Image (cartoon, rainbow, N blue to C red; front, side, top):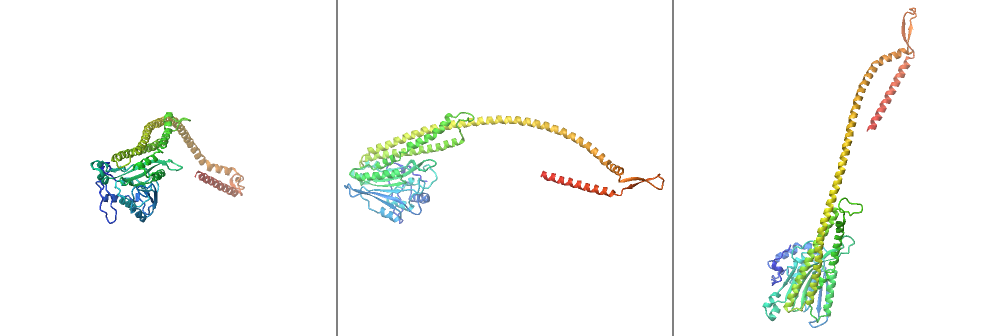
Length: 509
């Protein structure tokens, strides 16, 4: 993270000590209190996040005039893809009034800059770019979501405050340049068919100007399509109006106006999102949701929180835009007071109109934030009351269920008591049946003997030698049939009983 000292962002006198060129040609211009190793380490440390590692693909645009008085000029656009082409462009002799633009894109909105660290550092060294511009660079690179600024990214450095202390040509020759850099954030449609149709974009801007020969160097990081169109139109107008001098801040004013057009629609979109939730908050009934009432859920609170994050982010961005506009306005006043630059009254008015529009959007965002707080409070109360009402209904239902359970318990207790009485009676009946069974079993042999002797299987006959005085029992000759049939039937009955018993046990499992 880069943190600049107060002196590095001051509008007052600022000197840029140059280090002795090392063999590698990697010397940098420093902010006060910093050394080259600090900024070298910054670029190396964040190289994988900020820069491409393999190749560079960016553009260099030159606005050239044939000579100082010529009304003819030309625009050269060179696409740079290797270090050799970059070195050739950087070593070209610059003519009076020439404007040099480095257009460095990103791979995508939150991707790496399409330039290698070595090529970017070569541009900084060759164009004598002060290192506070790295604060702007450090806000780009790969990321997965919008992040808050790491530090102050607005840098305005001029020597015009010391001009009144010098006289005439000496002031003109000794103190002739200024440089500035900032990040301009805005919103534009992302063209996606799902999700949020808006995306937050940012463009890094750096300018170094020399007022004596009207030369300037511009570095743009991630130029949007509208910004690119404004730049090309501006360059074409300058070619057609070469005889007229233009303020060196004019392009900044055009960039501000080009990025301000979507703020009104975006803020209205935020207002529409809040209006839907506010309608729920204002017209929902307290208590249980009716058939035609609004459904207020925790998802609505989450949507409000997401909307709150968007509004806070927009508020921060609008404050940053106002800061840039204020510092550009102050810079215009300094240029007008220097006497070495065309008057910039129209430019100041354009910047002030931009600032007025931004302040209107900022006020709208402030009103939205206050309305959001009220909506959040109302929805919270509605959810709280509905939860309490639901809890009350649940409690009443639980009490009714408890009474039903008590009645059921009482009935079960009575049934258990009746079952115990029946079990006691059954036990008594079982004892009686056991006694009867015991008596029947005891009498069974006698009954069997009586049955056999009363049948024809055993007959009582008189002795023929005792004149009928004596008798004896005689077993019938077919007695064996009785024994065989009885045994067979007994075995069959026992087998059937066993089979039925097995089937009954199997049906239980």
